[in-house]
Length: 302
Image (cartoon, rainbow, N blue to C red; front, side):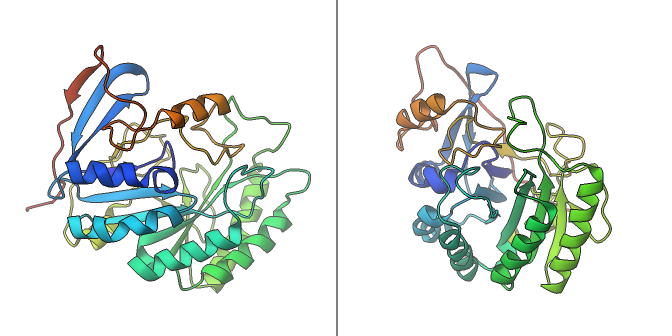
């Protein structure tokens, strides 16, 4: 099993103690986002969890828990998002100078192959232009050179709730211009560059997978047998995983976030968080239907 922690919220930034408690107790419960009373119980034995993929914008609060996770015998890597946007877009993300230092510290602790840099989403405004991105991306590449092997980019998806008066996604011509420039910059800095779930093909950039089978095999030290994740978009190349997060539980309050909807809902859910509960938000209720989700190691024995 590949465990995603989490596409839906930033567990390392906000829920590290809860996550460690789940590993120690050996299971986690996850509500179905489309059926609130349906709860999956997932066992988390190291023999079953082949790899954990952490998603974060700030791993600093989580660093203290890594030695214990290592002692428990889990393999993992990070999808670590660092963009140059300020508080006008990423409302509650820490100062980027500290974020960059945390990225380097994490890389020093666990190895650069296990910290993937995400520069996404790429968006445009009246102030944020393609040239602005070229300058910022180049500066960040220089700061993270030697601390990661791979940078992943994606372009803003203009889904329904997005306030299109504030920013927009690049058009195809702009995507090609930005992508080609980024490919040259990444090459100059010795970085492999990939796109995430993009239809467009750009010379010099691979189409990547966040749940990356070859990387997982490299980290865990054995071959795995895993299918493409059919629950994701057609363009997504990720391997199947189980996500243990919950929507509307991330206090970064990024304007472009697909996983958050209302600030009041986020604040209410985070206030209901109990680090001793098997659920990320609240506790099991009497009317909940809890069922065991079948999980198994993906280790290939052939």
